[in-house]
Image 1: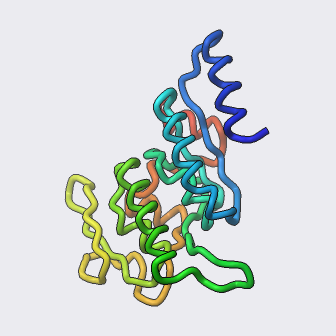
Image 2: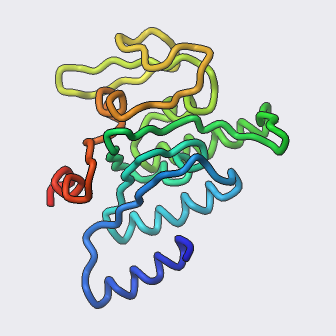
Image 3: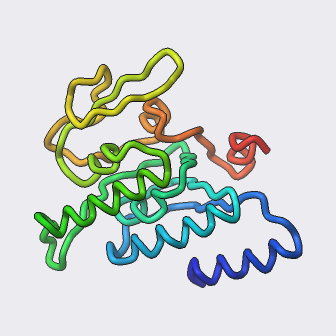
Length: 187
């Protein structure tokens, strides 16, 4: 079944037995870039109806682009995400105006999730990414190396592991099992 069918099934179930949360568990090395925006719309519908969270084992490329509109990220201990580059057939990277269109979509998804757009952009381009974390745990992001914490040097795209996702406040908590996830979510 696809995600649209799952949404309809959950709506029917919710009418009988109210649903509190939908967990989008991700273990994927990517997908088709042309499906990202339709996923944004669908996950916005999920988010409007239920608390919808990501639980990431591995989310690379379109696998992180698609649910990026969801504000809550939980990671498995071995979890990782990023590397959201876009490729044409034959292994040719998308560049120029075509890539700028993906940047615009990533910025829109970032705003919908409450994240700084420079985070996602760093998954797509080789610019540096750094941040400052204040005493209250608030993170300020920079698309350069001027922050106190160098998250990614220039010359690479961002792929982040569970430890760093927690350190830089990209993920809320680590959870190895569904029970751990439920506890981390406050259930």
